Length: 354
Ligand SMILES: *[C@@H]1O[C@H](CO)[C@@H](O)[C@H](O)[C@H]1NC(C)=O
Image (cartoon, rainbow, N blue to C red; front, side, top):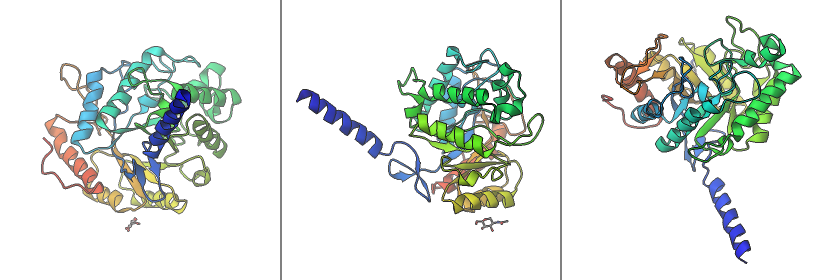
């Protein structure tokens, strides 16, 4: 009887857990969370797992971003290095299948802070570009293969799937929750800007790869929505007809309303949401209005936020889009972006942030 009761209580507990809708879902017209609409608005902070000096940010630095999210009325943060880093001794995946245990604490802290501040994270699993956080070519190097063999070489595809399995099964040492069971992850993104062309990046993920990787994510993790990491090439790989993809995104550094509308319309036709995963933090009011007025654009995240070190000094960075919460020069843009978030969320507008 005792055992029966325990089993009954356990099952009720589990049922209660999922019935409460702790994980973000998409209903056909809106994201929802705990039975209420969830509107993902916020910013990118790519460095929460590891920074450009190949150092792990302190808890204070990580926490600052979640405090900023609160001030900015943001509900979501996209962070590349919470999902992956590769190719450097300090990366989560330095070279081969072995993961670097030293890289987990900052990732665990980011998820613990997401929980504390009720913010949801978007985590890309690899990257297209030759930046400090590494890219999918790092999976090809051990086999002496060129970067573009990532999509089709069986050993490389299997290694990437192995990374995904290990990543999702990692148990956060602070929250004791496995990543695959953590409701504070909003979207698992197959990668950042996969298929965009540029220096040493010219191949587009084929449909077979997108199908295999998104299905693999779902086979390990039945909780989270999968975001297709294609950006500029979205649509060229039959993307909109892949069942195991739940969400699409585009990134914008110019007021390209035609592309925004075209992608949002394609996603809408198959009953799936489009989010703007990155846009210029200096965007005009007319661009903000274009995103706000398109009914198929279900969320927006600007590029990007930096912060301060443990002594309160600004972490130097300037790619032309960098904002700092405490800096006077960032305030006009931050107020405009906070009010953009508040308009989307139907909250009263602010006159000042500070
Ligand atoms: C973009 O889509 C929105 C919403 O559907 C529409 O109001 C607007 O006129 C479109 N803009 C262009 C340039 O196509």
